[in-house]
Amino acid sequence: MSSLPASALARLLGTWNPGTSPAYRELADVVRLLVLDGRVALDTALPSERALSAALGVSRTTVTAAYGHLREQGFLSSGQGSRSRTRIPRTTAAGTMMLRGPLNGNPGRSRQGKAAAVADAPGPGELGLAAPGLAAPEGLIDLAYSSLPASGELVHRAFAAALTELPALLPGFGYDAMGLLPLREAVAARYMAAGVPTTPDQVLVTSGAQHALNIILRALTGRQDKVLVEHPSYPNALDAIRAAGCRAVPVAFAPPHVLQPADASRTGNLATVAWDMQGLKAALVQQRPKMAYVVPDFHNPTGQLMPDSQRRELVKAAAVAGTILVVDETLRELNLDGAPTTPVAAFSPAVVTIGTLSKSHWGGLRTGWIRASGDMIQRFAAARTSLDLGGPVMEQLAAAHLVRALDEPLPARLAGLRENRAVLLELLAGHLPAWETLYPSGGLSAWCRLPGPTSTALTVIAPDFGIRLAAGPRFGIGGAFERYLRVPFTLPPDKLEAAVLALRAAQNRLDAAPQLRRSLKKAPDVAIA
Image 1: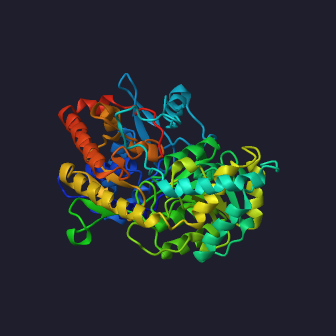
Image 2: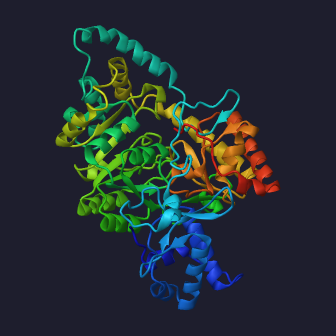
């Protein structure tokens, strides 16, 4: 169980007391929003009443009343003599409230009675596992996928070249758990050019980034091991961590910084967020997770970029905690603003890096890799054999050509994405001005904060308006991010306009019928990329 110091909670609260309501209620409301937004993780012990009252400069009575109000609402629970822990309430079909703890709660914690057991049991669809292969029905604009079509002629040319090279490999068995040497050499050369000394023996070829993460989890973790994650995080990564039997330790981002008009290229309600290094270091020290999974390069879903100074801090903190740092570089090549950064692996040979061609070239390639120390790669290769015996040879031959010419398609792709990003931000500002959008400096999507907790309801009714969405809680743990929605800008401008107009119409329906927000509680299962 993690704990939140009084100083850290005071920083998250910000200016919480405008004086429009009793102080205890205003304090409770802001803490509740912090929990719902995922900025205070579930099962976190809040500061004692005495410590928080001192940090905020208010009476202890105010904090006691605020905590009591949060318990009544179902957002806090505490046992005899213990500090209050954050929870999220769940409403049953009968309208009664049940408390829900974290999905990865401590199985050893004692429970009192059947009600507590029912409260902690996952409900239908609560695990949020996407049903793979659920493509959007024809006619729907798919906003659940944040991916690009193939880089056309380049991919075709790579496969044509691979076809001429394939006959030379046919006399062999075709199995290679490490991956074909030409592809590993090309990947190693790419890291060398980026300032990360790498040999082919430090590269393991995988069938995409998701496959790479599953191999890493199988090799490095056991059931009930803790894995630190950013909050929000990539849904399929969270699913993989759950499926491995591990317990995710979520760490929220720092409070958003609202951009002034002069800071943004377009008008609109734009903001940025930064990694909460104090929170990350505290979680590493307190929880001692076996592994940490982070996306520092155009984080999915927020589109934010971690600066080099924070990368150094994170590497050092992970080393002190004895935590293996796994860095997902899936979106690293999609640097829309050209901000210079150093690969995290350049700061420590202990870093494990995941890479892929899925976002820069095409998801259909299903080719990725793991870059790590030679000894670690051998562990991954041994663990892999229980999953598969190697990747398709033809795809690896083609991928070797694509990696050698990795920069060739990027200028045109980045130019198109910049245009799409500008179009989306302008459309959101014009048609949904109450939405607050994080400015994505790279990647493929924007992370939007909604004016109310309506993400699931929007997702449920979205097909009525011709779009498919991925609900905000799919990017979090335990029901967080009901006020958020990821909107990709991978579609052409005319499709983006149609999608935003559909979002506006769906939002209008919810605004006109507030009861829908309470009745639409279960988002449909959709595959997310």
